[in-house]
Amino acid sequence: MRYVEGMIQLYFLSILCNGVAGYLLFSMIDGENSPQIPITNPTFHLVLGILCAVTGILKLLSPIPYGPNAVRGVLIFGDLIPATAGIVAGLIFIFGIYRKDTDANSGELDRIGTNLLIFKKPIGMALMATAFIHFIFGQILFL
Image 1 (spheres, rainbow, N blue to C red):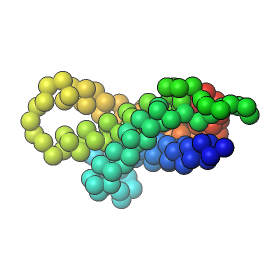
Image 2: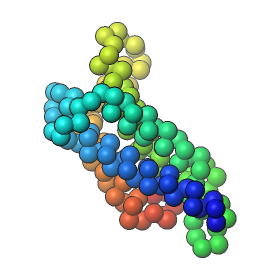
Image 3: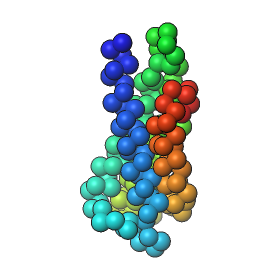
């Protein structure tokens, strides 16, 4: 039972990170990199991005056991959708800070990051929906 208790914190951290990141991405004003609420500190965005990415990677590697008699979950795909959403949110926030601080064109990385930043509002909505659904239906295998 100790295994389950330790992973619950990661479950709630994933919900919190995905929800906050989704709200910040969805509420960003077009053309500016500042949300409508006063959380414009780039350090906050960087820490949130790193936290989302690390939480997403940890959720892939440490699944929560499912079912009343389960000892372990699926080995790799613990919570696939929230983990992937967290990694994408982390990349968006980290790339947004990186792009703001540098002027150089880095080729492939710049193209991928630009494509992610174009879809920040739909990704924000998807992150908030993922966080809500993951909170409501926590023991469904891929949610």
